[in-house]
Length: 159
Image (cartoon, rainbow, N blue to C red; front, side, top):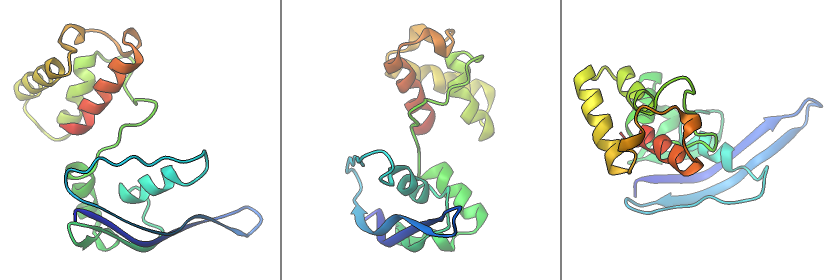
């Protein structure tokens, strides 16, 4: 099992001093190769759950284990490595940088990882070709359809 949540609970403190239980005892495990969908009504805790799994929020009770290791025990450096190497998010808003080309949007994450420019460009062009966007590399995000933007966003999180 790659990811396991054991009795995960998350509370938010409200303005009036009361607590709001966003997650109350989540128990689930994920195996390698599984495709999982987390669905629910607005306000049901989906984003809260994803923020905990993604290591973006560490204020919770219970255990979140990745490859048998409890992420709440990770140092900041280990959390950064976990987020960089193990977790990827595709946000509903795509989070593309509007003034950059599609190619630049894809290479920016590799820039932050200190990949050589020639390698970044070669890799980005290859990936964009794989997802059918090789003819769009010089376009800006507002020139793409929603599905094309989604593919660019997914490419950003899978490299």
